[in-house]
Amino acid sequence: MNSGDAEVLDDLLAEDVRFYSPAVHRPKQGRAVVTGFLMAAEHLFAGTDFRYVAQWVQSDSAVLEFAVELDGMQIEGVDIVHWNADHRITSFKVMVRPLRGLQTVSTRMAETLEDMRPAGPPPAHGQ
Image (cartoon, rainbow, N blue to C red; front, side, top):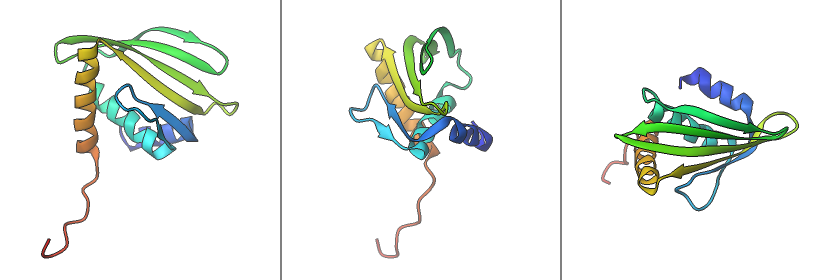
């Protein structure tokens, strides 16, 4: 995603949106944090055959089934998305199978998030 995509996400996500990762016990909260996770996922799956294969939509939620081949392994999952009356996403939950696929996605996401992290200030002199 480019910076324009981050602006689109800013318009789509509620300020207090929650992101539920299949690899992390507690949800991540806040527009900036969730934007980072979604941009990392887009970056990770860019150039793959990631595709949504089915969807179930209600007035305030959707379940989107996806499939992707990553590192030679077929991975399947669902994104469960809820939105508010203003049509801003309030909750984004991801589930992935098989277990080995979840482990692969988790490892690669951690690497992608680390690569996307802005460089911090240099250490103070003498440290």
